[in-house]
Structures are given as C-alpha cells and as structure tokens.
Length: 281
Image (tube, rainbow, N blue to C red; front, side, top):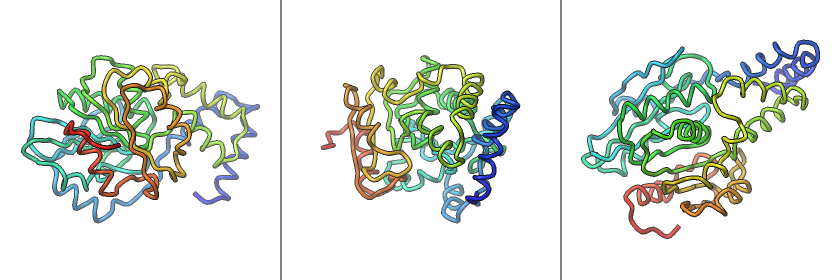
C-alpha cells in the first residue's frame, strides 16, 4: 500500500470517526484485518510438496494444517502476518521424522488458507481446532502474530494440551499492533479508541489480558523466548521487560537476524529446547 493511499485512508477514517463512529469502527477493523495478496514463493511450493495437508473448517473460512514426519512428539508451528506454513520449512532438515511430527498451520488468508482477512478471533479458532486435531501437542512454536493467537487460545481454553512453548519475534500485545496501525495510517486517538471497542466486541477476552507479560507471568509450562536485538517490527524492549519476572522462561536473544529469526543457531536453540537438553541460553 503506497504512502498516498495510507494517508488518504487515514484522513477518511479520522473524518468519519466523529460523524459515523459505529460504521467507522467496523471499517477500521476491516482494514486492520485485510491481508494483502502475496504470491507463494517457489521455496514455499517446494515445501508444500513435502508435506501432507488437511483442511480445517472454521466458522466462515478454512485453515490448512500441513504435517511432516511420523514420530510420537507433535510440534505445532504458527506463522505471523503475511507469512505461511513454509516459514518453518528449514526445520524439516533438523528433526528426526521417526521421532517427531511437525505440524505447520496456514491461517486463513495465508498460504493455502482461504479468505482475504485474518483477525485474532479467527486465528484463535484455527489454533484451537488444530490442537484438538493433533490431540497432544508437545511443543507450540509461534512466530510474530502467531504468538498473540497462541496466547489467546491458551488463555481462553485451559483444556488445550500443550507441554511447552517457543515464542519468537513476539509483539508485546495487541496494543503494539494498534500503535503500528495508527502510525502507518496517521490515525487519530478517537479512531483507535473506536477500533479497540470493535475488537473487544469480537474477541472473547479483554484486550488488556492478551499481553505477553501477563501470559508469561502466569505460565505453568516451560517457555523459550527468542528475539532479535535489532528487530524493527517488534522491538525487544517490552520483551525484555516481559521475561524479567517470568520464572519458567528461558531466553535466547540474537543479533542481526531481524524479525524472521531463521538462522541455523536459532533453529538449534529451538531444537535443543524441544529435545529438553541442556543449552546455554
């Protein structure tokens, strides 16, 4: 989306905020949830040929669960915004397929998922159904927006079976996403207030509960938090604060890997954590 289009949309929303607050809130939410079209790369196509796939029907759209391996330990992996299941393709080279089964989800409007939009409630539904389908998730590995969907799903449904978790490139909470949205479209505080009300109308838990620091402080499972010092999409400052008082959390902070976190040493750190071996974090 060009700067001109962003500026024009922002001006439109700012103007309508006072005239038609209800419709403006719905329009803001629609824009926030809209997923830009993105071609699937050749590497992603190659990944999809390596895995078996199963559609997961949701209330209005479909997610797709891609699986590789046939081991007893099941790993569920969630991608971020404008990404897809192939984000995790390198991991297939680092795990024993006889010991592990890797399940990589395509959320709606991403990869092979259907639809043109994705919001937190829809992603939560997809995560919950994927966990139910797998049956017993040994490790939930999540990246970027996938973190908020996982936090939401686990907080909303305490019966979801997940033994441990890997949190990668996480935003501090939905507030960070709204702040980014506000900055990109030059939105007024009134528009953001209306948008927050619309989000709270759709999701099943208060937004202020769905924060990384709140989740980590109450977590009853081992968690590895991985973040890059130079991440410009999800700054590390709030993440450092979030892990400071979380007793069950280990950290692996990288440098110069940016937001994607796909270098070999990071994959090693994830694998060692999953395999429950000693590792110097």
